[in-house]
Structure formats: C-alpha cells, structure tokens
Amino acid sequence: MMHRYIRHLCWALLAVAVSWSSASYAEKRVALVIGNGAYKHVANLPNPPKDAEAMAALLRNVGFDVVQGTDLSRNGMTDTLRKFAGEAENADVAVFFYAGHGLQLDGKNYLLPIDSNPKSELDVKLGGPIEVDTMLNQTMGTAKVKLVFLDACRDNPFVEQISRSLKTRSLAVKSGMAEMKSSEGTLLAFATAPGQVALDGQGGHSPFTKALLDNLAAPNDEISVALTKVRAEVADLTQKKQSPWASTNLTGLFYMNKTATAETVANDAGPQPAAAPSPAVSGDPVEMEFWRTVKDSYKPEELNAYLTRYPNGSFSPIARARLASLQDAKQNPTNSRKLAPAVATAEPTGTDPALRTEVSSGHTEDALNLDRAERKDIQRRLNALGFSTDVDGAFGRNTRRAVKNWQGARNYFESGYLNRLQWDALRAEPVPKEALAERDDQDSRPARRQASHHESRSRHRSSSSNSGGGGGGGGPPPAAMGAFFGGVAHGLFRH
Image (cartoon, rainbow, N blue to C red):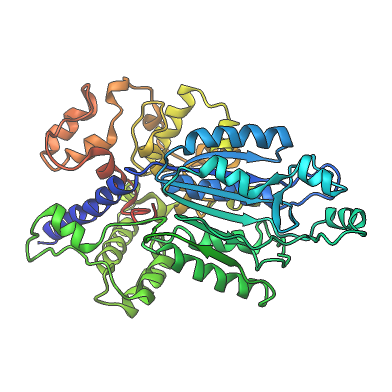
C-alpha cells in the first residue's frame, strides 16, 4: 500500500515538473546583466560584480539566456549591448540588470562604464556615459515584456566635478536616478526613489540586489508581489533609509518562476486513484512561504516543524516521504547512496570557508577549462553520490539540475555551475572506485535506467551493462524522472 502511495506521489510530482518545464521554456527569455565596479578614476565599488554574477545565475535558473558583462569599458559596454540587441529581438521576455555608477543630468539617466571620467555636461552627453532611454529602446524595443532593474543610485563622486562646470547654468546633475515613465509592456525598478542615493551594502551584495535575489524567483509570485517583498526587505536591511521604487506599464500578469497548479496537474495527468491523491498547491501564502524556507532541507527538525504547523498541508506528503528516506538512510547505512545529502560526511579539516559563499556561474565554470574526461568524471561522482545524471561529457539540463541539487545539499552557492572550490570539494568526497571506472558511452544513462526500473529488476540490470542505457518505451521523460530520484525531490520546486 505504501509502495503504491509513494509511486503515485512520484508521478504527481513529476507531472508538476514536466508541466512547468514545458510552459517556462517555451518562451524566448533573454537577459543582459552588467556589473561595473573597477572604476579607473574613482574608488572601486566592491559589490556590483558580485551582484551581477549572482543575478545572472538566478536568471539562468529560471530559463533565461544571459548575456553577461563585468567591469566594462565604454567599448565593452557598446559591444555587449550590440550582442544583447540581437538576442532580444522579438523576445517574449527581456530583462536588463545593471549594478554600478549612474547619474542624472537634465532629467535623463546615464550609466557609467569603468573608464568614464565626465567633468562637464559635454563629457556626459557626448562622452563615455550610456543614456538609459536610448539604450533600452535600441536593445529591448521589440520584446513583448521588458523588465529593467537599475542598482545604479550609489553616491557618485563624478557629480561634484560636473556640478562645478555647471555653476553658471540651471541644469541639475544628481547621483540618484531621475524618474522614468515606463512604456507599454515595461517594468522599471530602481534601488531607491527618484533623486535619492542608495547604499552599496556590505557582505557581498547591495541591499536592493540581495532582496531581488531573495524574492524575484520565488515560485508563483507575480512580479508585483515579488517587488513588494523586495521593498519590504530593503526597508528592513537599511532601517528604512532606502525604499526601492518601480514604474510599471505591464499589460498582463508576469511570473518570473511560474510553476504548475493542482488543476494543471489534474488535467495533464488524468484522474488519480483515491488512495493516492496528488498534492494541491496551497492558496495560503503563509504556508507557501513556510514551505519555501524548508523545501530544500534534509534536516528532520525543519521538516517536522512544517508538519507540526501544517499536518495536512499541500506539501506534507513530500515532507513525510523525505523524513522516511532520512530515517531509512540512518537505519540502513548501506542504502545511504540513495540519499547522499542526508548522510553527507563532514568537510575535511582545513576546508576553505569561502566554499560556502563564493559565487559559481557560467564564467567560473568556463575558467576551469574542463575537458570531456573531466566532465564525465564529475557526472560519475554526482551519480555515485545520489544525484542522477547522464554520463556523456556534455553538461545538459539534467546535469545542471544534478549539480544544483548537490550544491543545495551541501549549502554551497546554488547555480547549477561549478567554481574551482566546488570542483575540488566534489573530487574530495569519498565515492567507490568502481563508480569512477571508465565505461562505454552507451552505458551512461542512469536517468533512463532509473525510469525503467519499475518494469523489472532484471531489465534494470541488463540496461546497466548493455548499450542504450535502458529502454522503457512509455512513461515520463527519462531526464525528469532521473532528476526526481537523484535528489528525492530536492530542487523540484526550485526552478
């Protein structure tokens, strides 16, 4: 009976994952992310490059193709904007995020490349700064939905020297951004109110960017709801010294991270047996927020706290299933490979503390210059630790999900991409030698082997040694099923 219940629960959760994936990735989503901090003529800003790295990772995780630039000169920004303009043409959703110095002159806003050194009105209008309205029209004008996030209201040392050149004129130059009116289909969000100066922040991110990272991709939060939460968090972080400001002219609801509803699952999956109803998505925002804080946890006390508060909650079957797996792993250490996050060994003495805080992104992984053999080694190690993925030397969506689930289980920065410290940590984790043995490429589809496991145990064994990696003609998409069993639903609602 319990086995049948868990089986139907798995199918219900899989329906949610597949429904979300097909809905989100059908859109053409593109983003431009720029973080300028290494200014040549004024003191460096430490946070914008980190802000940009983290924001780019978040956007990739919710289906955006990201054009990214860090510490760009005027020529570098021009080239990057030109590339983004091509990517954003006729996009369904286009996002622009900028962190760095900006200023307003005569009611217009400008962003400053790192080689900017404006000393007069002429330097601003004909020199290095990038005028925001023109830039947005030229790069995002044809997108259906346009989202703009400007963390460019920091105290600007260029303002004083420009002001001296304007002392005989009535033009105003300010550090804060001037108010902008959003065109149809556009949302503009600023770190603080027009004309006000925002804090750069400490601890790696500005208050505005930190709040965006915490709230922008919350599942099923409409963008206006997410920005309300951003505003509240920034006020709390700054003791109400800073309040983000937004102008919107969107013509419909927009969700950065839309997941399937219970009704969608029922329509797609058909009627479910009475003994195994699929979990409905709660309409209670308090419960949703509570679950968001524990949904990636493998700590029994946190899962039990949710169950105590919501014994019949929408996600109580998931919490109970995970608790049962944790208990099983504790009582049967030989089965711990099925739930590697719950029984992960302590990090070796001398582990770099930055391992838990250092950002990982496409750039940090590219810097590793991984060859095909090294990528396959990473995939084998993930499989050996219980995070199922193909072993083909190509880091596709299945591998990205496995990496992200591994990162979340270890409390590392979650992006689906590796940095040097994380790569070293993964290689340091003990795994059986036979799990790392070189095999025929055709014997490298664990996700498919797991999907066909329900047909027969003997077929599963056969698929582990024969080419093709397991058949199973029917059933759910193999990559999605592998992702579920690789991490016991870890990350299923994180996308």
